[in-house]
Amino acid sequence: MRLLSTWSGAIYAALIYGFIFLPVIVLVLFSFQGGRFPIPPFNGPSLKWYRSVLADSTLIDALLNSLLVALSSSAIACLLGFLAAYGLARHRLPAAGVQRALLTAPVTVSYLIIGLGLLITFNTFGVAKSLMTVGIGHIVINAPLCFAIIYSQMGAHQENIERAARDLGAADWQVMWLVTAPMLMPAIMASYFLSVTFSWDEFIIAFLLSRFDVTLPVEIWSLLRSGLNPKTNAVGSIVFLISILLLVVIELTVFQKVTRR
Amino acid sequence: MSTDQVAVRERRKAIGFVLPALVWTLCFFVLPFAFMVVMSLWQRIGTKIVHTWSLDNYAAFFAKPHFLQGLVNSLEITLSVTVISILLAYPLAWIIAMRIPERWQRAALILAILPFWTSYVVRSYAWMLVLARSGIINQSLLGIGIIDEPLELASTRTATIIGFVHFFVMLLTLTIYANLKQLSPNYARAAADLGAGPVRTFIHVILPLTIPGVMVGAFLTFVLCIGDYITPQILGGNKELVLPQIIMLQIGRRADLPAASALSILLMLVVTFVYVLSARWLKLERA
View 1 (cartoon, each protein chain N blue to C red):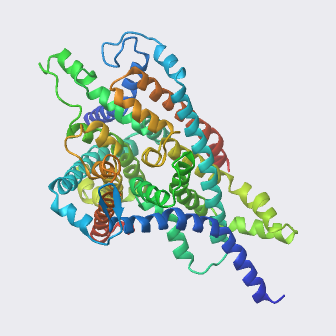
View 2 (cartoon, rainbow over the protein chains, first blue to last red; view 1 turned 135 degrees about the vertical axis):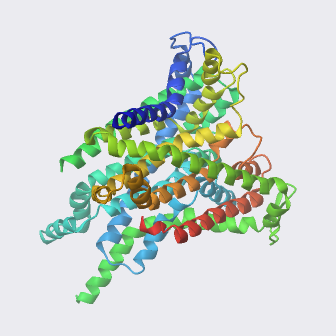
View 3 (tube, rainbow over the protein chains, first blue to last red; view 1 turned 30 degrees about the horizontal axis):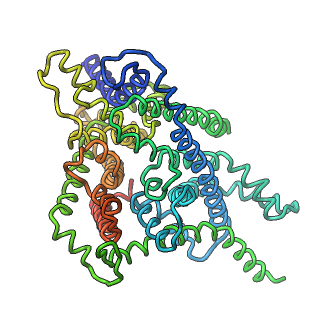
């Protein structure tokens, strides 16, 4: 009985993991396809589709655009979130509950609706669609996350250290920059990388708010119009690789520090 | 300087910290939302947007069958996805939480998340590859001899549901796992002491205790699924459109921002309605 349940459990887990991994395995495998279509039979391995991706300047531009938008919009989202968390955690402010609710409200609204609202607003004021407007959209969705993460990590023990620094003559900006920020670095880094990940992968806002310069998900979207193509597999595999590298970096930098404490 | 003045100065400084984020939220979240509400009350006539106030865009939703059908499709797909994902994820979460040794559990969870680090768009495309007429599933089934004709899997509602379930099984496994880990093992021990077998313990003790956590996961699944455009657009084959696809059609091909705004607000109302329903009846806040 016991043995039976162990075996059926193992088979079940294997099936579900198989289901979860199936598309990624097919994606990566057929990115090395020698023929013209990413479907069986597999003949390869060949790197020609990777060469064709690296030679495609539109795709490389889109990749760089994505990195630019992700890194810069996340930095601003993080800064806004950190300052707001500092203000709300360290001082008693009127209607603090309302302020917190307002700052986290964008999390509850779907990206499509945030994108549409911004599209209408930019149209009204005649702001041209660009990477800048995409970045603004990404800050709207990511700043609440940064705020919530950093705010939740601001405890009383840090406040005492800040007070000590102030008693020793540190000015406000020195306390914040030299004492608070370093103490909260794990939370800040975690929220930054989370924000980078979301921005890097975000499609609908980028699609609605960009025009000539587009981000990678939008460019991949237009690649899909050509149907099944091993080149799309190659791009997807490259994105996968970059994301995994990012994950490893986070794991080694941020979370190692957290556990060491 | 009196203490009052110090307090006022401190408060002003504190507001200075919060202000950038508040102004940002007002300018790029609250204001756009207000614009959207206003836009939904205007009309598009020809290629112009006319500033006459009316509820016509909302009335159109109930008058045009394909709009209403979009909502029905959205609800049907979302509910199927939520139920199937919970049924598939719960046993897996159980196995990871109860059967796998403690030190391997984190690795098991990371392994489950790993495939989702591809781009979102690429993930749906990958399912297109798997489900295609000459894709790996059809070729394997033909090879073994289970089927004689390739199955029409790609570009169907089934494909959309598979694509969604793939993501939400992972998400729900994480939330249900967290829920099971919070449970004190004493409950199961007490039930066993009182003579309940493993099946009865599960049905009468463990399952009811994890229901609130499962409901939170279910609500999250519902919200993310009903608002999604990419998965049905890539995998659904443009036959049975869901609400976000209809909204995108208004924005893109028809350039009808008033209609798109009204439909978006209706979509938000549906989500809010479900939230109120589940918060009241299922005690969402307790979990």
